[in-house]
Length: 128
Image (cartoon, rainbow, N blue to C red):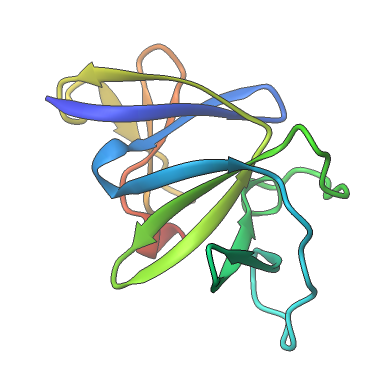
């Protein structure tokens, strides 16, 4: 079984393995990155640590928009690096058989789609 943290981006149901997730926080002020990097919307000071903030909206191909106070940052591990994932909202944590009912999203590495339509980021370093 895999424990998944569920969230949404532009109304699309998504999830990430809970084992990689450290905590979630409400959106805070972002500073612009010094160098433009794919998917990085800015940097955030989280408990004294400066983290890159990845816009899942941008990485999933949706139109970018400014952060809203109601948005959420998921603080998670992407391999050895700690990063923040900018999402619209989080919903719950569920257990499901590890990728048993999913199919690969061939054109976007690191993603699978479950039989009920949930986009699962199963390999965050590859996806980023």
